[in-house]
Image (tube, rainbow, N blue to C red):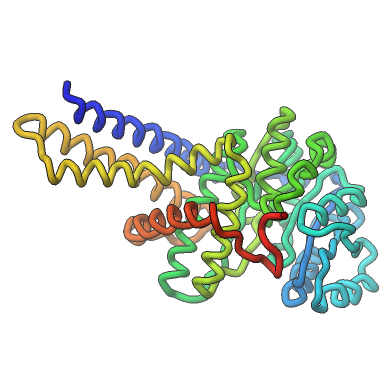
Length: 384
């Protein structure tokens, strides 16, 4: 057996492992569609913690959504923690406080989202903490659904869905939708299997005890981004059980980026926080997903320039062709399984066309994030 054939076989085997992992997440999403989450198990106290900075445009709509929840108001505490806003965020929350006794407004004693979350937890009375960003929207059954799933699954941290609101048709919108479908599919598919892979800070729940046992995120305070992944890893290190809820009833909806600059800056923040978790499973999965197509492309290019002769050519061509298929098709299948899970259409052909562009952008962003720290709301994404 030649060295070239061994290299092709290694490439094929790596693609197979990658494909099987993505396919297992797809199957987990498909199975979850048949599971019924009870809206009533027992009434539990929830504390919704919302760290905000300059969210005057969206905070009122979110608080109105939370005020309209079907989960009992007496069991729902909403804590808004202001992280040094310079707009009218505080004033708008104070206006609602006068008519809503369960709404609390705090001023963060530190700087950054982690400090704001920690301050909110210190004032929380609920046994389950629901983390929410200040610029999202949600449906009326969200908290009841989360409470029911948390009790049924018996987990310490519950990963929850995030949907992107798409109100236009453009390349950026299609690319962001495809990327988010893959990320959400991986996050929730792995979570449904009890794996601590990824989390989204806009929507997750954690027991107060697990948060305190894991010391929250205080050990990672120098990173002003990545609160979700740091906490997920900390809970898992403490032996905490991870679960997920993939149904749209528990989802929050965020507005998609309308400009490439916003899109790229957001991805640079995400890539930057991954560098703070060098030995986390998410980092290894992301590294393999990013590096494999480049290695396979280089190998394919070499084979085109130096094709083997005879039966060796047929074997190698078949192996490389199937390697590309078993790498790409499970990714597309996972994305479409997620889209169907939240009752959204999915075009497999469009996903296939966007996949090379997405991989190219992801690789470039991963490299650039090593050297560039973008600003987010006037602050660098990594502390000094």
